[in-house]
Amino acid sequence: MYFSFILLLGITFFTWGQEQDTEFVVQEIAPVPELIDVWNTAMVRERRPLLIAHRGGVVGAGTPECSQMAVKMAATHRYDMVELDVWESQDHHPVVFHDKNMKRACGVDGEIPNFTLEAVTQIHFLKSKETITSLDSMLGLCSSLNLGVMFDIKSGDGSDLFFNRILDLIKKYHLDKACMMLGGSRAREYLKGTVLLTLPGKMLEKVKQGESVDLHGFYWFGVPETWPIDLIRPVQENGALVIPALNTFRYSKEHHRVEARADAERLLEAGVDGFQIDCIYQDYFGRSKIEESK
Image 1 (cartoon, rainbow, N blue to C red):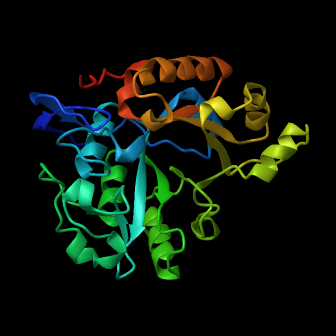
Image 2 (cartoon, helix red, strand yellow):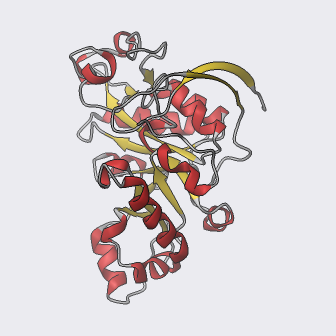
């Protein structure tokens, strides 16, 4: 069902931990036109480049990392997917939060695994009305906004109940064709066949050797400067998507925008399928520019 609503937001966007004066803007938040199917390479390449919002959405002062507002802003700026960091609560529920400790973001010196779901979802982010969110609520929001999900499951050695709950929630919100996952945790065993998995090094090595390998169900994710450009096409031809990352922490503080733009242009020309990006770089892809703090 289509819905939209108008919010009066006090939002500044920033990087490197700096802030600027808040400006009030009116934003319309409405669903992305169509939920992505990451298993359908033709659909992905028709929408190329796929854009995945790093750190849980479009992030800034007033829109904390991995908050519901950050996800809503990702829909506003027409991202295809959001990356969600997921931890296991004390009572084995999946919870969306970026850091290991809540001190920086919430002023609470503690970690998600030491709190129950009920307790942790009462905790507010600093200088924000947003609270920490359960994966249940967040996937419901993503589904309503037609946003796919890239999972970064931080509790990689979590319980069986934790992983089964993630799987059940993906199915509950009909996101089983719109998800991918980072890393090599135990979650791969549970989510294989439901989400796209990162391409194992052994498979990539076979492609390097010129072998034909079935890479359907995988995507190549990594740091742009380490990638041999001539492998992009063979990886795609064997069935995998190619998704590099453009993140501020990968570049120099003084010249990160210039360096990231150079990577974006080089990789777009090489034909990558999409990018996981920090929102400071979204203007490289036709989205409205997020101003950097001085």
